[in-house]
Image 1 (tube, rainbow, N blue to C red):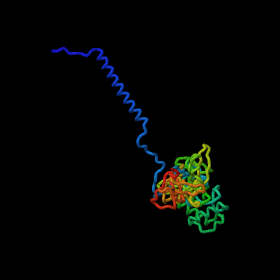
Image 2 (image 1 turned 45 degrees about the vertical axis):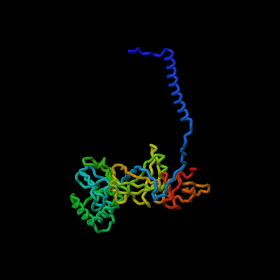
Image 3 (image 1 turned 90 degrees about the vertical axis):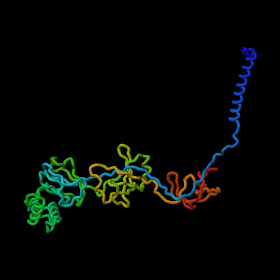
Image 4 (image 1 turned 90 degrees about the horizontal axis):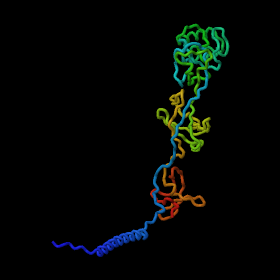
Length: 361
C-alpha cells in the first residue's frame, strides 16, 4: 500500500489562513448585508391613516349609573298607654293600618284598643263624667255604630249602654265603665302604626305612661347615599329608577342634599309632582330597619335617533356643528344629546359616511 502523502506544513498553514479568511469574508459579507438591510429604506412605506369613516346609523344614546336607594320610615310617637301589667298578645304588625276599634295588644289578657282623639286617656270614664275625653269616647262609639247621640261630652245612660255593648264585643266584663288603659287615643285614623317592640312584646312589662304607639307618615323617606364626586351627578330633578322589594318599577327625582356626621352625602328623592314614590306598595317597606333598593340614576336621558361618535363632530368659531363627509365637505348638523362618546344628531341622512375624528388631516 502506497504511503499517504501529506502537504508540507507551510502549505497546510497557508490553507488554514485561507479558510479563516474565507470565514471572515463570509461573516463580513453577512454583516454588510445586515447593515445594508437596516439602513436602506424599504421599497414601500405604509402611510399612517389620520382618520377613518363610519356610517350615520339609527341608535339610542343615554347614560346612567347604578347606586342604592335607602328607604326608611320615620315613625312619630302618637299614643301613650295607661295600662300596667304583662303584655300577653301583640295584635298588629309593624306598619299595619289601623282603624277605630282595632285591638293593638292585650295586657293581662285585657284588650288595648285604638281610638281617635287629641286628648290622651287619663281617667276612668263612667256615668256622670264630663269633658272632651268623653266627647272623644262618644265619637268612637258612634264610629262603631253603637251610639246614636250627639258627642256633647256628657257621660249618660245611653253612653253607658253603648260602652257595655262595646265591652261585650271585645270580650271583657260589661261594666259600662271605660278604664284608663282600655283605649289609646291617636290624632288621626285610619293610620299606619308601629309599636315600640322594646316595650310591647309577649311577656314584657308595660307601665302606665309609656309611649308605645308611633304613627307612620304616608310614605317612607327615600334617599341615595353618595360620595362628593357622585353628588355632582344628581342635580335637582335628576330621575332615579328604583326597583321595589318585589320588583316593582318606582320613580323618584333628586331633591335636597344633606351631609351626615361621617361626611356621606344623602340625596333626598321625591315623587313626580310630589306623589308617593311607593304608591300603593309602601306597606312592603319594613318599619323596623332601613331597606336598600337597587336603583339606576339617569345622568343623561336616553334619546333615539341618528347616531355618530362624538369625535365625528367639529365646531367652528361661531358655534356651528358639522360632520365631514367622504368628500371632505362639512355637513351642518344639530346635536340632540351626547353621552359616553356618542351623539344623536339631526340634519343628515342615515347611511352617510362621516370622518372620525373630524379634525384629522
